[in-house]
Length: 431
Image 1: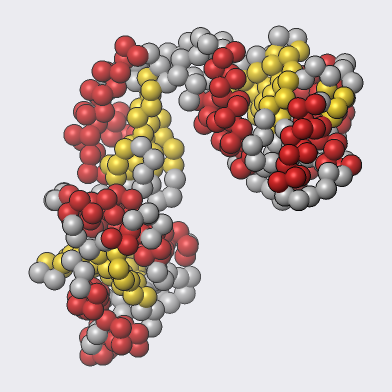
Image 2: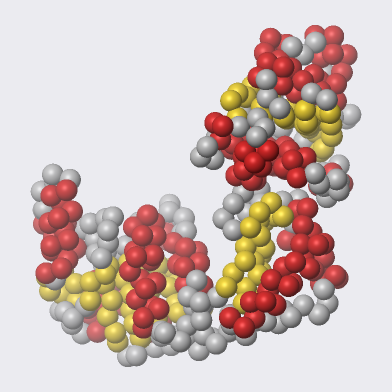
């Protein structure tokens, strides 16, 4: 399944700078964002290096990277404080003095005026860049970016604030790279969001079912929580029909696990399906504490299909809010088939919704028994005429347990709305 990538000759490396990254106080997310954006124009990040706020180390690492790179993206160190050293290090590397750049000072003045903030000496430091540097606009923050060329390498310097970097990559840096490297082949990527299969299981299924998968269609995975993204990528326009053909073959095998295509998730798809069917939905949650309802209400327009949810964490509230019988609770316990059935029927009656889901389980780390170990959860879902139930044992730490249970609940409703009759793989996985 190896790809043919005509951009392998273009070497791109990232240099991250900051003591906070070295100490672990700040977690690096910028390099992942950079890699993702580069991939959109057919460029592959080959290496990333992190250094602290030390001018000698920073300059030495820049020189080392530039000696075998076509592109270096330096991230961080453009701020107003004395430990922001990127501009100085670049100046030393290319043997150019720092000078006040007109575009940078104009940007700072405008930024300060917009916030009724005086331009002080500390902020003014951000306008001093290596002589000859080209300013990269920062529509969000005070520090502009810049780039220089040295020894056949383009060195692009960017702020470390993730929100600023994100905007600058889209608006300035990626267009710059597309212009400078017109031979880049923007890949065609199909992203399938999946739930219910892990990476290893999906990979093995593909290997077993499609031993002759074409090299022109690259398969890759990005694990997430709770979904897994499967990417099908081609780098040549002539291979697009092949990608579509093999996507359809794959869908025929694992299509029931495909939540949707593109930047979507379980809650978006459930809201979309409910809207299409002109149906409403309610939730009644114990062990997830309202997480299912929270996920649904992240989706714009969810109020059309979701009017009410219930959090019944105690037995008392199960009785008061959704009319679970005290006798049922006493005989079977809160984590039981009988209780979740009554929970979902009570929520449907109270809310008037068309569909509902109920969950009651033992999130841990304590509270389990031999018959009901930690991780046991009962789920009920359906409508007033047809309520189905399932017991799962999700052996994960508390927060992951809650997210997994919430995702399963949404997926079961998704499957019902789509009329998928096949039993989910996770029914046998979580036991």
